Length: 245
Image (cartoon, rainbow, N blue to C red; front, side, top):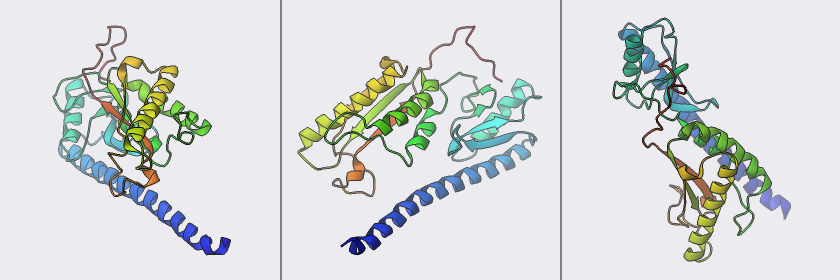
């Protein structure tokens, strides 16, 4: 009996590894393309000393580059560099390694850092899990929630949506209630880790929003998703206000 299941299980493992590798590979290609196009754009703008790194703090590929190499430039030149990179198709928000600048509007603002990519990177190959038919986190997921809280801290001043999902097993009213309970459990876990409650929004959608490409019955739909919603940033005090560097 064991031998009969050995090959299918092995095949499933290969498929899972292949899916992760495919996702990672396409993200790496995206980051490499954006880095090359940004390098070319900066050279054409006579700013060859600026480097755009398309990766978040965890090293995962990101559309939001961190610029470096502008220490000797004045603020107008640094703003020009940020706007040049922002002009590359597919590039998201721009930040400097020693500060932030809003390249899209041409006005310097101090917005929450790009936490969405950080959280997505943490959850790319791991999932927040719960006890069966329960909103209680399993021990391993408590450690993952610790990492999520660390990634979300720079986002203070934004609204963070926490959405619980289930598969289609059981009745949909029960699924909605369970997904809501789990989203609330994650919200409370984040509050205990220092994330302000007023910035967190929990909701449960049951099985109504399956992962693209999966049927609603697939257990892989059981998940928690985070969405960092950019709102008006908190106004920093003169003491807290960083310089454009």
